[in-house]
Length: 180
Image (tube, rainbow, N blue to C red; front, side, top):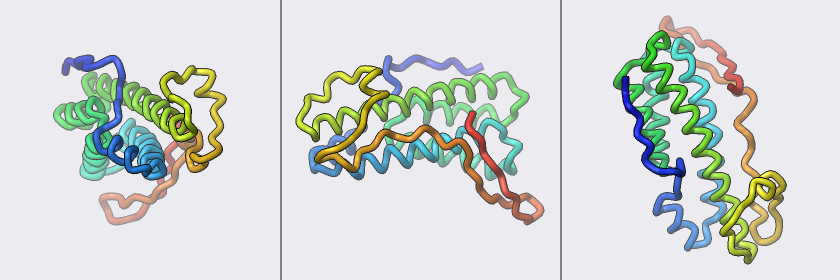
């Protein structure tokens, strides 16, 4: 079984290009990147939880897409876990696969939480505050207004996502992904 090393106490920290965007005043771009990553990561994690939902090649493609997007936004541990899942294979009966998927889901929730904290800190800084400390209460009660009106609390991962996939025999199938 693969050993997972705890690399750091936080699951995610902003990559350099986020800081560059922040310094250029591109807060809306950062917000959109975080929202997109959150949305598609939740959907892909749900899809990967049952690799039988798609043919092996398409499931592997989704795993690689998740790995690439994790690398792009600085979620290195998630990218590492995706690589480890790729190595052990997409066998839901395997203990290694189940352990790695559980770890990936846990890490995904932690990364999305850290991203939300980062977005709130950016919003506070844009409003003139320090953005240094964000309490759980402030995180739950936050409402965005003022100069940073484009920041809104990040949505919870979608309750359900529908997509159409092609089956191995060439037919199209509608798949409904539901929140874990």
